[in-house]
Image (cartoon, rainbow, N blue to C red):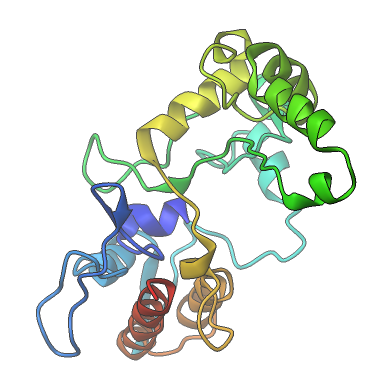
Length: 240
């Protein structure tokens, strides 16, 4: 999502800690909550697409879709690509023989970033523990995981940024770097908006869009207009 967001598209926009549900009508001026902003198509044409007859294709900044996902890591280590989108399962990428930092995907304008979903660990206590006679033990375990000591022990294994602020100073350099990046550009991951209507989830729409316009040569304007309508429908459905 970070790259799309940097270019001007994301599943929903946040305003004052909530999803912005102010959406434009077809043919009307853009609104603050529109998932696709007015500059998105021009940014695609400028930075990641090149003309191909009446339509467009990838300019090579992004390689053709690689479903096996085997190229990014070795290319990053070899210095063939400027950055890689990493997860907490890849700490070795920042300890290899390259100079690198962990930071949000940069935006089009200096000092701005593409939004990403914050990555911390959480837990909740359900009625299952009470129904099995384990409520006291479950509460004790949950309180431990929420404590500084519990977070330190848990994140030695799970390796995400610490959810407990007092424990965060004990994280390794990779966790601290991710926590800093998350603090600069993260938005909440809200399933009711992402899961979509009629099977049109953000996850399927985003990948399918790139394939259609950059690889399959479909009309950029039409495809983007259709995507905008689907994402707006997801925002409306998620708000109910």
